Structure formats: C-alpha cells, structure tokens
Image (cartoon, rainbow, N blue to C red; front, side, top):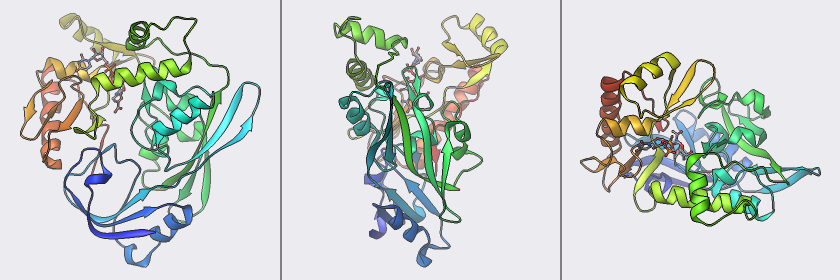
Length: 340
Ligand code: EPU
C-alpha cells in the first residue's frame, strides 16, 4: 500500500482544485483498508474515503488522511432465466462497469451511463439519471463497520434510498465503508426511454423500435451528457452542484401561475420536484463567471472551475446562487456535493 505525505489532491477530485492533504493512502484490498484505518499513526486524525472524487468540494487543505479506494473485482454470483446478480468491489469505476455489463448482454444500467465515480459511491447517494435510479437495479451491499471492522450486509430496504439519498448519508454517515455492491440485472431488456431528451436523441441517431437495444440507449445517454455536461478532465466540475428541490404542490401551483414555464415533476404525495437548473437560469446565473469559477453555460446546475479556482471561491459562488434562488422563488436549494 502506498502512503503519501503532504500530497496534492488535484488528481483525486474532479473539481481539479489545488488542495493538499496531510496524508493519502491508496488501498487495493479490504485488508489494506482495515490496516490504514486502524494505523496508530492516523488513529486520532480525521479521515476521508474517496472513490472517484466526483462529488466533493474541498474548501481548504485537508488536515487528515484521505483514503483512495481502488479495490477491484467483479463476479457473477447467481443467475435465473430472467436475471443475473453481479457483485462488484466498491473501487471499480462505475462507467467502465456499465459498459462491461452491457457487453455481457445484461441490462438495467444503460440510463446510468457516463456517471463519474466508483461503484461504491453509487448507493451512497442513489445515483440517478434519465429516468432511472440505482435502487431499481440494486440488490444488496456489504459494508465494513468502521468501529469494529465487521462486514455487515444491507438490503435495498435497509439502505433507505431516496432521491440522491441513502442511510449512509445521514443515520450511518461516517459509520461504514461500502466494500461491495451487488446488482440485479435483466437478461431481457426493459427500456426506459420516457425521459424527454432520450427519445429525441434516439430519433436523431435513427434508432427505431425494431433496432432499439440497451447499447443504443447507453449511446444516447452518453451523447446527451457529452453535449450538456462539461468533461471534468477539461473543465473541473462535480456534475450537478445542487439537488432538485422538492416543494409542496400548493407552492408549486402558486409559482406556476407567475412562471408558466416552471418545470416540475411529481415527487410523492403532495410534492413536486422542481428543476433547479431552471430556477438558477431564471435568476440570471447561467453561464455567468465569477473570478475563476462559474455556472456552466449549457447546464446552470453545474458549477465549473475555469482553472485556478479555490474551493471557497466555488463555495461562495454556490452561496450567492442559493441566495438569488431563495430571494426570487422562496425555494431553498441544497448542495448535492459534499462540502469538506
Ligand atoms: N433546465 C433549465 N436550465 C438549465 C438546466 C436545466 O431550464 O440550465 C431545465 C431543462 O430544460 C429541463 C430540466 O431543467 O427541463 C431538467 O434538466 P436536465 O434534464 O438537464 O436534468 P437536471 O434535473 O438538471 C438531473 C440530475 C443529473 C442527471 C439529469 C438527467 C440532479 C441534481 N441532477 O439534472 O445528474 O444527469 O437529471 O437525468 O438530480 C448529477 O447528479 O451530477 C447529475 C448530472
């Protein structure tokens, strides 16, 4: 195992910030993880586990130990005529795993193509895109209880998934390390093409109902994401910075009278999910630059580092956007990104 001291975190987070960590360990196995977690040298300092670093914003140097999860492995563990269960170690790259599943002829994850990060991070916030959430293909996970080193299994129900939520983001925050994730995939594809942009992209690709397959959906999703979302390798970012807020229907209807093109989607009884990107765009922040950072011109929900931005500069931008949205619409938007 590699342990580095006073190291730049630039390669380990997609915002590409010039921040340092007091120490950094790259772990390739469960035992390496346990060893470094319990290491006397790091016993009393704060620790942070990162996968792809695609959902964090460091507002200053990290005075602790960052652990980079590179634990690899994938295996088919069970099969029926209709389904297959595949267990991934948590350090596997999500998108590579999606492409691999599709190559095997197993579907269910095609709408979740090109999401940055690792498999282990996927259940943490129940990743979702283009009409599908992880929970729809999730079977179970194994996590290491950090206080004891014991491996504990969690079913989907026990993970308490919600929109960009799981038990590991609240009740069990910093209590477990997700070690493996088992997905239940379809052998006979069920298509999810209802999300607006997908249908349009499929027809642009000349895909008909006869030629439609999971690979084509994956390709359509990749094309849509590439057209809207900046590539972190070229422009530092963390995907959507804020969650889409969920408000009471009454409040939504009132706002819609004033703003007839306000975008909203049903979000459970009496609730509507509002497109944060739309709210931000309406306040005039879309494509606006503030110093070395700004709101992306093609998707206002994405904050970008134009190069050399400091984490607290991006955080300040986020606070200003949040305030504008609240002052204009009376809606509080909450970051999806973990602010460290
Ligand atoms: N919109 C605007 N202006 C903008 C951006 C969006 O008016 O600048 C409107 C669009 O016109 C559209 C609606 O908002 O009607 C929704 O936009 P989009 O389809 O781009 O999706 P989103 O709600 O902004 C969510 C996820 C994305 C995911 C897409 C596609 C969240 C916080 N974000 O974005 O996830 O890729 O849906 O399913 O739920 C991420 O989490 O990092 C992420 C990129």
